[in-house]
Length: 88
Image 1 (cartoon, rainbow, N blue to C red):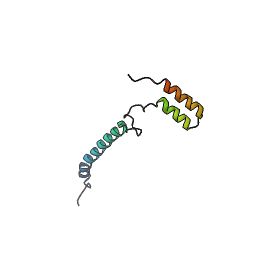
Image 2 (cartoon, rainbow, N blue to C red):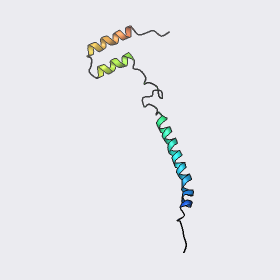
Image 3 (cartoon, rainbow, N blue to C red):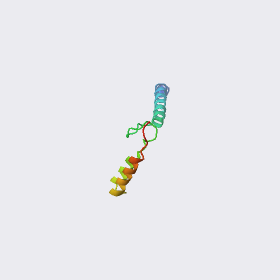
């Protein structure tokens, strides 16, 4: 009668290196995935704050949304144009 243990040691000898490779690859993938910051879609710098709106852009947005009326918009535009800093 032959006694055979099923070759379990041979299977583990072949499987263990593959298991360790898979675990290391998973750890590397997780670190890269958690530390990678995608580039912003609005053209800003990666990882930095979004670009600030100019006063004119804020005024345009408020007028377009109906937050201010046409008279207030034109007065504010004139005020901004009169007080715009001069380039050096």
